[in-house]
Image (cartoon, rainbow, N blue to C red; front, side, top):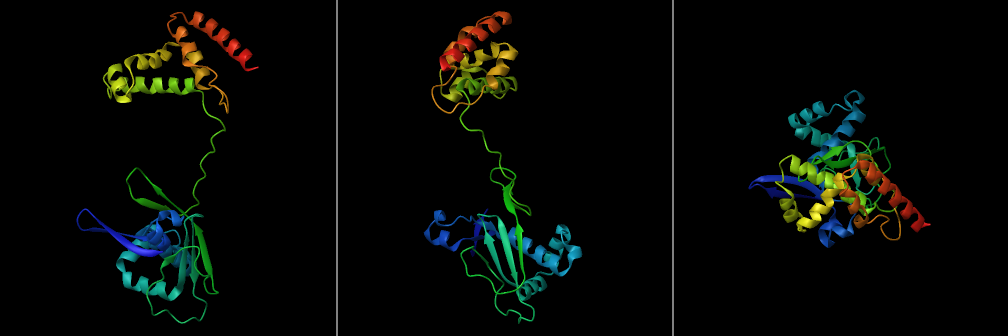
Length: 262
């Protein structure tokens, strides 16, 4: 990877490493994105210092303070100890190749971060650590976490019925109005670019009995075919003020739906 930087806010410089192929041919040519220079360099220093002095491994604050106090000594130590650093953005690993015992110190520049397609390192001890970058919020800087990237839960196959999503939307819209973020249903219609009648239909789902709403929200997903329960079939229930009548109509509606699917 190639070291680079960007200048923001007039004179503030942000250093990072970017894949050479991505820089020349576009980001689609490389699976590794841009890496913050300070984060990855501090991570490498911590790993090397942890090997040389195991008692200091994991002391992030002390390591960072030492790096700020003795930058020239640390840079020289890294050049003398590290042969190269391989960064694999797809797998989320950093491999640090140390110089073989008895190898002459390097007189050249500090080792640069390179991608996974580079030539293999010289024979010697290697350190491989898993890590991942994360952001605390939109637009915030990347933070390096010295642990494997957590696996995201796999959503179940299929899609939720549309009526379930509309009922969830109705609860969300009611919360916005209740919190004062939106004045009324007319403002919701303007924001959603739909008619007031459509907003009224969606909000009328809140008139259903709580147990009916719970069943609607937890309807099973479906993988093919039409939506099992259209909104138009539920609207007559929303005008009934008696929940007992709603429940009787709801049971009949479910029975009809079940027979139509058989």
